Length: 100
Figure 1 (tube, helix red, strand yellow):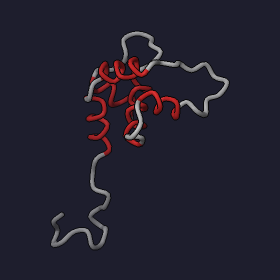
Figure 2: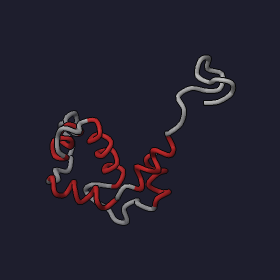
Figure 3: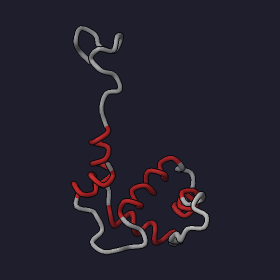
Figure 4: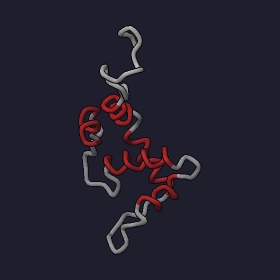
């Protein structure tokens, strides 16, 4: 879904980067879970289980620049793909006289 949102908004990176657009979206999703810490600490938590692999070590400024590079459009598109009612028409107690 992340790739679809990036393609829909035209924000897939044009060249090979240390922080591809897909990774930046995952960073932003993780930053929503850890709102009390900065991008650098969120990044550290994201890569904590990747011991032994060659992983980029961007600065906090580089992470912020990557966020600005992709902008809000991919997250808005991703939300549009996922947003909707948690209940369906057959769920009892959710609808009253056929209305939401």
